[in-house]
Image (cartoon, rainbow, N blue to C red; front, side):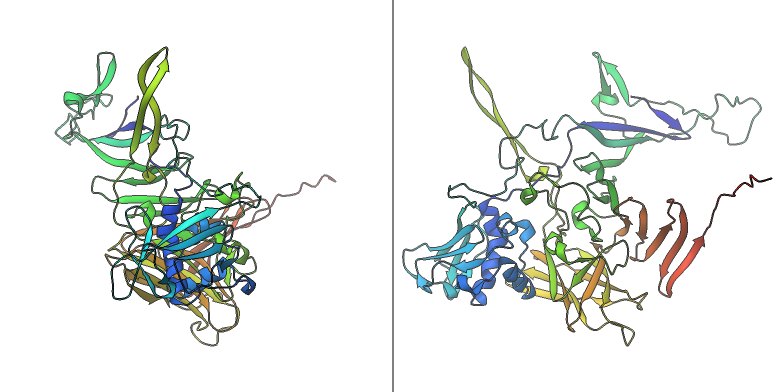
Length: 552
């Protein structure tokens, strides 16, 4: 490994085998789904007296999800495969008895049930859910007693044939034995830490001297190398560890994606920097200082049709901040930046879980078994890992303060200084309670678009965060360039052309855009800046080729 000396700084990079996270489908088994998704979904059904929907009513799962979100329930179909794969399917009850030992309902191709645990009939409309158990299941009690009366479970998910084949997404990384090299958990060398060497120069007198040779001046006195050869291999100096008084590490890689691009790093003070990639992980769409990867979100609605179709669209890799449910509502006629915005005629929303600070890395379990090769000897049977090997989706950290920003435009001329026919709010769910914070406009309407921004403190016991967007005046509302990041972080985001991938706009730390315009040859001809006083042209250039007069 080569070392490079520049002035007084000498940097060395340590490499580590194996990537930190994978872009892979997360675990979506029945227990996790029941706990994280079906519990709030059925809480809404019970509270709103919607348990016993008839097949003839023609109620879709998507209709109920929208109603639940509008009522403040943290239901997210993107975090649960049973809802995401059946979001356009029907929901109805197979049993109609309000008092029974078993209640069954159909969710698309799946059947779920609430079963009495005592063998006695229970009144399903009076059930109250308990906190999720350690096994991921959901239990219920009745008012006035804490004893468990019923339990929710997924009975089956069948395909469209007559065979009883279970159809559900699973993680090849966390829910089965895994080849650590096949999935990139091991064998890929990535930078781990970079070190800088700090020491004095050999010359102590800063005044020039005729006796000093410019060829040898400026060298570091008493330089100690980071590595040494011992036993035919490289080892760190000073008893297998570098001299930390001279060699000081300044950056450590913590997350990379499936293409080897850096997603997150940290410095010795524990400050994180992170980035988001889009367009099939080809281009950076947001960079943030002083925030972790899981704490940041940006959506410009530009790359939902970018790239080829995956082999399994139903079990495709989820996005960190996923509006795939509203893909049909992306509008090309209105945009703050880029080519698209989200059109909301009634309401739209997305939910993210809130978690505590988690540790670095992930766990590997090595399972042994006897192997017979003439003689029986102990051998390796399988390797399994936990969900820490997967890239985390957007999930803010409890107890922190965040900033939510977006650009909004109504499909009508505004008669005043602000729009009044839309509603943008965040619902913070806590155990037994929820808190709604309404985002307000910050600044004037600029070319039809108005910036909304709100600072929100997340309680320590919060469990989920829901972003709600509504049209309240009977006409469509457009949303674009939605950003969420910690209050003390600095974010910049980028928007590219979907056909040529040229940079179309750059949004600064206040979510104001700088627009880039090109001619037909792809030459940058105009640069515009969005300010509180409107969009101003910063630079503009024109160029042409002179034609030669061949008649002379």
